[in-house]
Length: 134
Length: 134
Length: 134
Length: 134
Image 1 (spheres, rainbow over the protein chains, first blue to last red):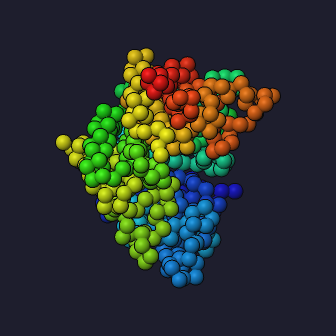
Image 2 (cartoon, rainbow over the protein chains, first blue to last red; image 1 turned 180 degrees about the vertical axis):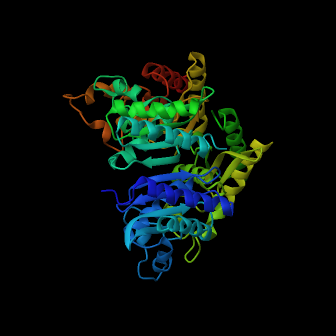
Image 3 (cartoon, rainbow over the protein chains, first blue to last red; image 1 turned 120 degrees about the horizontal axis):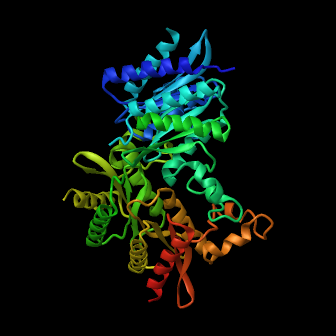
């Protein structure tokens, strides 16, 4: 059984691309299933290459932690409860741009967006999330 | 400078998906630029997950070697000239399914296809190559 | 297609070596193309060996982020926007000494310099950059 | 103490480049010291990118084994004495193109050449070796 069929993942990807176009920031966008395995991906022209790994890892992190990556930032700071978390489980991303994708309250995958500011990445990821819910 | 713009990579990907549908074998399909960096990717419903890495690595191998992956098979056998090549340069794939993408005789990237038999993978990759040339 | 021909990369390398000689600090100097792949490299007599990897990774980081490595330092501190970035995309360097190489406003590669202080590394890298522009 | 000063390594590199030009096969050429650490490197225009790693690893293998890489090929075949050796010590290359560099009978480093046929790689590496002896 596929938690996130390709057609649904593509709808998420296309909505994210449209939002990135709208705000004028080329992005790397990755969509993974509930096992954290890649379903679809696009690097928009001009988006930095470091974000191929970062966007994919944001999506994977969101599945592995079942939480948006932005929620981890406070927890991993020096002195905070999960200091060092970012180097575990193969390398997690702790800044915004990764968000779980849910259907009927069940996590079926995640989207990860990278190449802009963290705020821009979150905005584009949310557009992808909305496309699945819609 | 983008050697392979997203719209061209998407045309390659879509032609490959159409061919995979036609032969009834769900595939993982990766398209990379001339530096071996991922541009776009799709995993069709039912395609095995091991092939996420294999398809991407076939594309990367094709760029790094500037040759189809199928051309490497004979060279790496016991007793052959490049025995052991497959473990070099980060891990190369030596069976069919990766093919360079060229424009005007210049390699601008590569496609990697995996999840079927090697022959099926090559057939689907060739459909992607033809879409760029067309 | 070669984004940065060897003769141009050698001119960058030689200018950097000359500057390192001038300031009396032996350096490791790496020049990569726009895919982050090594084009040429030199380790000057007496330069520390750890900097073989560091100089190369500075150059790769500059390509992957399309920015000087020095620009990343503030962003990855505890509490800052990209905390944890340095461990992503294969390992990025966030201190000075890596700078993109551009021709007509297009990034064609990068230089990475390491073995001195960060300020010395930047000075030598800038001499390399100037040689390409000149 | 530097086992192989940069000026000597550059002479080796330049002789190898000249031979590669002469035979009309662009090459990746790496020169390492007696610790296997890179001293200088060049990728000639048109040489395949996979050979960045392969040339460097041929040089490293030559130092680690204190032998030409071509000498290993027979030893690692199925049924032979060192079957599996190529995956040890971080990954060794067992086909020709890596040769130790010696001064007065002492190994001071190695050259690794890759991108042509194994025979071409050896020819170019030998030109580098001769430059040091000369």
